[in-house]
Image (cartoon, rainbow, N blue to C red; front, side, top):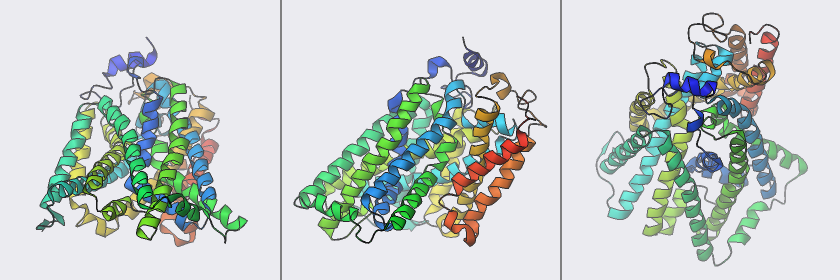
Length: 480
């Protein structure tokens, strides 16, 4: 029995929904193969926002299609490198992000970045529950033909019914534990691709075979110069890295379930560049087909479906949008929120309790989103928290690889009263100082117009600054 397995026995079963969400995963519970890791990224890419973002890259950045594709591949490879770094400790020791953060931030200090990440995740979890409910509402209206009706808080009766059903559906999945989460992700990822391919085929038929010709015009950019292509390339890479920033920092929440390190690496290799290429190609073909059929380049897939005037396609699309939105919600929002909340009181808050707390917040945020919350500029607050997290990534990487040489004391990671990672009453002063100094820059890119041109790269710069400052402060004095 390994040290991790012994810890697992001591702290209870990690995959037990009633158990502590932060418990280390034992070797017998590390069951996720490369396909499960692949589908983490498939679901993270396959959202309505992800489609609109990718489609807009080929239109709005003033670059040729091949430059945009090259930038997407470069971004995928960079993110893959980052998550292999951040996920290695999770795979090796079976620990989630909040526990890994204890090594660098301290047993108490780690609660700060964990709750910041959880706050961002809880907010977007509630918002995504609302958006997933719009897909179910589309399905109900397509089947029944019912529309309109009186509204309460900006939602009709069908909207509220859809919202409550989607909210409850999330609870059903997490109530059964991470095995059900894995199963849903493995089904949703391939299913969404099948439907997207079907939509391309429909547009191909309606465009009388002109889809490829229309797509080629998007690739063509006769006014492009080396400088405009280079700037566009850098901008697209920065945009896509920022899109995946949240998952990069807490990827150990998922990598700890991987069978072994090669499985994680293969899953990330297949999952990131491949999904970026496939999803981008389908988005491009769909946009090109819509340009022929409807006379304009439409980057919103729901609008494309609505214009087809097909009830069958509307039903299929509604199910697809629902699956895609729930998938990304589980990956990017639910798991980080649960682990962050559980880290506030590890011995008292189980996986299910943390999930219910997350769901209660989601009920409030999602229910009030359409009529109240969205009008108050909450995105600035959430973006600030996200920017604040950037230095934590750099601090964790420097601590784990440069200072500790990939060796952690597993028992002390769960010792909240003393040990290697207790530092000064649970806080590592060097990490806290590095975190604060680097976060000032990251937050400045959100609020100060002078730094707006760096907003697409603020996460990377913030992570580098955090790691560099921490290395300078802690090197030679860190207790390992």
